[in-house]
Amino acid sequence: MECGSQSCRFGSFEQAAGFFCENPAAFPLTVACDSQIINQAIDSGLDDFEDAIQFVCAVRSRSAYLVTRNPGHFRKADIVVVSPAEFLAAINPPAA
Image (tube, rainbow, N blue to C red; front, side, top):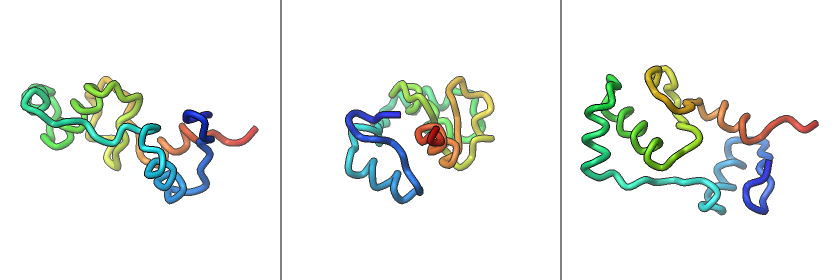
């Protein structure tokens, strides 16, 4: 898998974090949280407000994944929700 001109093969979380810190354009790190996000979070149907904000931000940014240590909190989400380990496995497939 390619991320721009860089290979996305990571051996550890630290290597992945280092890659994204050095290549922030490869990974959207922030989304502005405005009143529209807050209102959509309130109306989202998710039980936890902070989770709802994360969900709405992920949808707004058209993220392919919502990465969280609590995937079970997003059962109603209509976006791919993965743990950090699942995300790294998705972007770092085993070598053939």
